[in-house]
Length: 76
Image 1 (cartoon, one colour):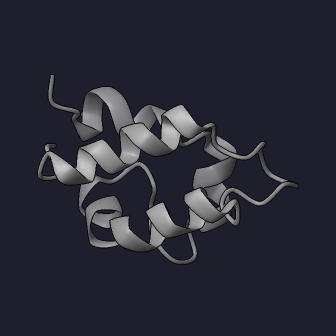
Image 2 (cartoon, one colour):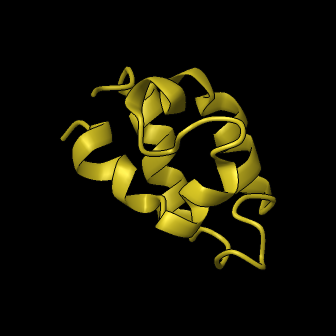
């Protein structure tokens, strides 16, 4: 089954994640996340995002879901 932003990806970002990143882009806006998906993926995979002070590191399953969303063509 294809992964979509609205159903699967948006909810992976918490309010704290969003607040932390609002100076750069909005993690709850499809266009912003799509435009920055490669950098977001790199950061969550490396454990740089979210910062430890904001939230725990993403699980391997969350990273896999985000990557799958990208591979599926960034479905809204």
